[in-house]
Image (cartoon, rainbow, N blue to C red):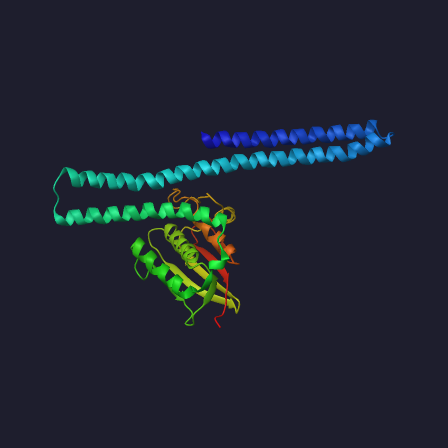
Length: 301
């Protein structure tokens, strides 16, 4: 119902803006017809009426964007509520069980393990929100230093395997340069960007995961991290939206939408702040996806 109302509101403001522009054009033409013999009113009309039309168009665009932005923020709040409520409810259930009845040691260990996973999920959600706020504010480049990009990618690959319980055949290296590749920047931010790329690939890879990680050097001044999955793929319309803040692409396989809509936004923001960029490629739904993050390479003296 909420989406329907917003769609109607957007259509209303677009129609209203079009009608006002048409009315302004009609008045402008009429003014020129009746005032073509008088130089001053004619000149004023030629100047003021185009400004009026531009103002109406800009006002309509602004209103439509505000409606869409509010819709994205509501979607984000719903997603955050779900991402926070689910692990909290899970931990509460297991704690109540531990408190209410005696359990054998093996069951207690299983419960503790599940609750630790729930806390990791909570922590990850909070970190996503905080990092999204930080990347919008920017960071001080004075604290940047040369970091080993190979090592960062390798560490995040192992961390993703551990957190997602993946085998070495589900997430693995395709090509990894033997030489150290150095980039200038914040090691913490780069770890966040790389981990978000891996997490996104796992999330949209379906049940049988086959994710290939490559570090490429297309030229002497550039390093590219490429993450190739064989999952659900991305539609052409979605390719332009997935890096926007709060946007959550639906999973074509299940129809469900997961996450906070901040992961890929953080990836691109960090890449661009480091002088690079991030983009996605896909042949369509069901045909897998390739995400690439490019960064400028530096050389240690």
